[in-house]
Length: 140
Image (cartoon, rainbow, N blue to C red):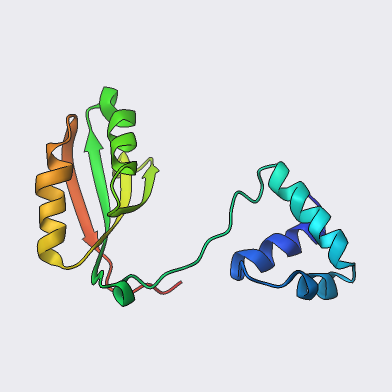
């Protein structure tokens, strides 16, 4: 990966819909050269996909929680895999630090988050502790 590839990745990270012509102009290369570089970045698994950033509250999800989940050690991967199945789990991470798993949960309100924690996550075999932290404001 060279400096031109880094510019491509940076521009697409900021806006995945950046026109290839705009990238080409910034780099001083042809659009075809940008397309070739993109294909190479995708084949090397450097760029793994393109996505839209969504405002949860605009969709009716007024409560977003970064929820730590602690498990029995031998159940870590089972619980993490199970969490990936739920639509409310927008991102699932296996982590070091305070919690073994971190999950970004989107819920309609506090009552729904409570139900998710107690009736779904809390009942998964191997879960020992669930620690939600409600996001007050996303800054970046």
